[in-house]
Structure formats: C-alpha cells, structure tokens
Length: 280
Image (cartoon, rainbow, N blue to C red; front, side, top):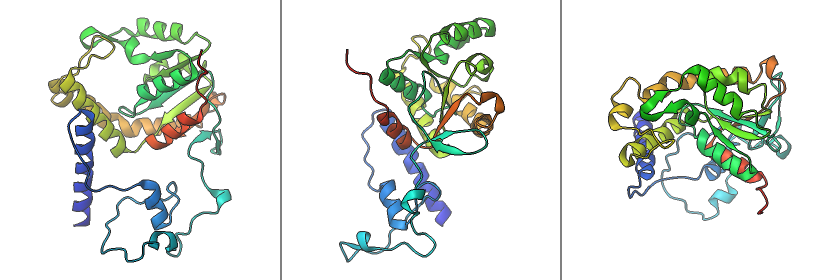
C-alpha cells in the first residue's frame, strides 16, 4: 500500500509539472517545503532526506514544531560540519566549497536537466557570450551537421577568451575541455530531471515553439518514435551520471574546477551568489 501511495504521488507531481509547463490552470492541494520538512524529521537535507511524509492526526500545540526534538540517531549535525549548498570538486575525492566560476565554463548534465536555461542565465549574469552546441549541431528539420563542420564550429566558438557553453556532445570534449577552467554539473535526480523533460516536451509539442529558429518538436516525434527525446533520456541518464562522476577524478582534468549542483534550488542559490554585471 505504501509503494502504491508513493507511486500515485509521483504521478500527481509529474502531471502538475506538465500542466504548469504548458500553461494550464492547476492547483496543488497538498505540498511541503523541503527545508521545513528536513527540520521536522531532524535530518540535514543532504546526507539524509525525507522522501515521503504522511501526517496523521492534528497538532494540539502551536509550538510543537519549535519544541520537537529529533528522534535518537537523527540529531542535526554540528554547525561546523554543515554541508554547503554547492560544491567544487578537486582530484583525489576531496571536496571544497565553490567560489565564483571562471571565464570559460561548460554547463553539463543529463538530457532535460536545464543546461541551456542555466547557461543562458549565467552568461547574462557574467556578461559573456553563451554558446549553445545544439544550435551549432542541428540544421532545419532536424538534419545533423557533419562532424567535421560541427567540431570546427565548436573549436572556433571556444577560441574566445570568455564564454559559457552548454551541451552533452562527448566528441567535443578533446576540443573544449583543455580550454575551459570550470565545469558546472547539474546532477539532479532521475525523477526531477524526467519531470522537467516531460513538461518541456509537452509544452513544445503543444506550442510548436521553434528551437534555434528552425526545428520543431512534434507529438509523434516526441512520444511515438524510437528517436524520441524521452527514449533518449532513459538510455543515457544513468550512463552520463557515471561518466561525469568519473571525469571529476580524471588526472587529465586537474586544471578544471567541477561545481556539482544537486537540485534546481541549489542551482538558483548558486546563481544568486554570483555578483551580476554592473549596469552600463
């Protein structure tokens, strides 16, 4: 019964995100704030997180949430051991708190993680060019650019002194990564990423929103094709997460700072921590 209720909850969440993405009127009748729930059950929200909470009965004491003590073994970590909201990776498996990004930045993550949205926001905040590899690769009607032409375009674009790049084209790594100084990895959960991707796909199929000025996602291509981006997500999500985790400790990338963001909330917090470009 518990598994069934959790599954129903996930379905409802996905429906909510999909309807919100395409502009339909929708209202959530049950929700919670993650930080308050973490406090309620006495976990730090990073090493341990609550996945599901079913309240039973009613609170008689208005100060119950303030006076409640965590159960044994779930006490909050001391202040000096609290984890920062985002991290920068160093080789050897150690971690240190991230500072400002560099001048040549690659935003990576699995399909649907929101790489382009984050890259565009970061580039605007830093006042540097945004390079979208999908725009360089896809021609009208989903025709692919030949590798020789595509790799040359990426090489030329990344010769600039500053930029924010996004894309998952592993064959460009030998060109791009020797030049960059920072990799921002949007390492979101499977459920969260799929929810974002599903909502985005439905919205684009409904609105016929042109991408890069010349490509349009269709219902047939998105939901009833072997080339569906949803199928591609299921094929690549776990593999890409493993690959990026491995690359963080690869000796040939000791010059790279890896900033690993585990949720959209952490990403938004990190972006807000970066001083915006002063008005001209």
